[in-house]
Image 1 (tube, rainbow, N blue to C red):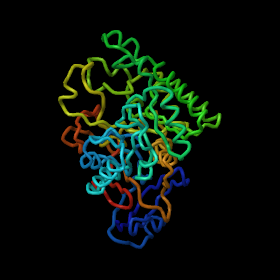
Image 2: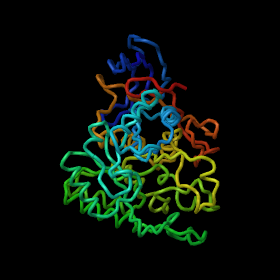
Image 3: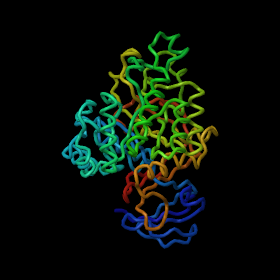
Image 4: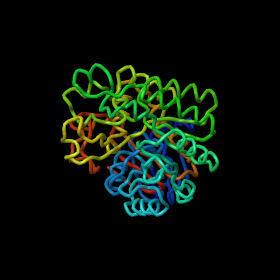
Length: 415
């Protein structure tokens, strides 16, 4: 655990109503004092934030981790304190032994902390329930089937009934795989022009409607990962208003890009869920700004060969962890995303969803990031810590330079 005194930091924490220039004293990994700027007694080493923002640590609700060491380092460099690792690891997280293995790998890497998501079904095959209670007992923060399909509605109902009985949070993706028809991008004019099979919005909304009805029936706690359609946001709002214990997030790619970015068959923009229309993007942004949606990275590191294939044959996914915060701050800079809404969506709301204590307050474990939001950053393949260089922002100028990241009371990155 770290001892450190931060000076001249602009604390910004919507959950605490904080927007102040302060010093912060950290001892043994805990925040022990928050004082007026320049008045603290130095404990351990000193870090002058130089008026940069001090934000509660970012929590990524969905990352696909193929290499624990490189990806948790990328998370640390990107200002992420905690990241949820989807169960489709090299060794699928469907047993306590697999949970223990990824926890040990995270501990050995000593970067940003991994929170394992256990598999909902055995081997993610969507047929037989995994030992859900054992996975929770082993340390899984929630259970997910990644984007692997669940065989049928009866299996899903049994999952929800079991989750409700044992108070297990389940993470779901809304996709009717029959309606998706192995599509490669959003169904619309761009797909027609490029001759690519499209994925209609109804593939998401029909699945979401069915899942919401089953949640109403079973009373389970559920989180919907990576919504992509504007209509889905309205469905989530309505279900929450009816009292369902649900939450949802959107991947950063769906807030920054649209199906028009696929022009030229750039396989970097081959992602699941697909990039939708500008109207969908705007509605998703509104869902973040009003507090309905959290934001996740949906990070998937891919090697060069996986993305060199023609668009339809390329593997889906983007490398995001290094640049996640900068991508969000760029949307803030463009005045499309409100700063406090961004903090809520990437830190406060994810903590609430996972049942974690989060915030900049005395007695709290130090999870935070210091970032200069006005600094311009240009990412290159060489600058990415992630093993995947399949990033959509290489060579682009973004806003926000991470200066310091703390995770679970430890300093894990300093610029």
